[in-house]
Image (cartoon, rainbow, N blue to C red; front, side, top):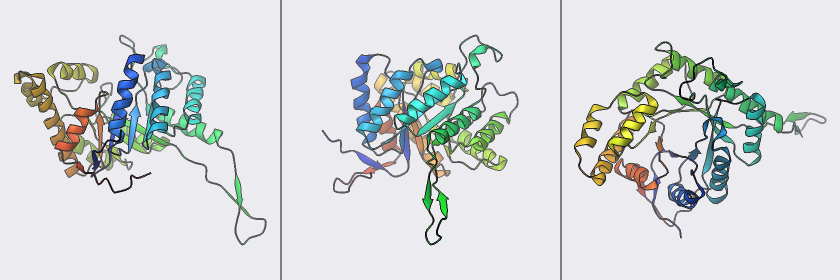
Length: 320
């Protein structure tokens, strides 16, 4: 059954994660159908550290590629990877038709230190960006074409490029050794070939807008896409803060705590994320990336409340 929703007024994208069991596959496929109906720029699929969800990630990416018109974007992490293993995995994704990636260093296992062997052969996301580019170049045959008007002359056919996104940290990386290290790291990722940055979550528009200003002043030129997470319960907020090390957003925390019902808490989280989206767009953000938690209702409600979704014209041909 077709879904007649809306078309976004600005570029939007979503993140989902592979189902943890076969029972969740059909439900997630339905969620992807709803997300794809608003013509997002891409849907990204997370990848477990050390390959814990690798097979399901590829299955989900190929489902998006096969069943929708949306570009799938594959997360790849450095943690625990050898060069040979990462090379094989990248080739597997490319052979399946996946040409967009999010290159991440990845988080160390609990209790591990920087010198531990878990890091693997790839020490940074910038090295992973370079490896993805190199693998794509190696697997694409060299080709020449005649140069019109000059007998015997040829031109080298341009090889197709991959799109490689990287992470950015508006409030600094939790393992940064000095205040500007996260921007230095973003510059290194850009120099390695990254084409887009997606921020980790933030709770105040000024965090994103100030970070973009500092990054631009330092020489970052690639688009920096704000990553927004609708936080719809006190428990989810606590979990997010535990995982990211972000500072407690006091007003949001109080609003969630004093709201007595789950539906009311959900409304609080949606309203906060919608206001955040409006504010960063007013400040010049190139689009909105939403962490969906494998639920389409909440992120689509955020886009609706933010005024990003506009009425869909059923007579207008969908973009290819």
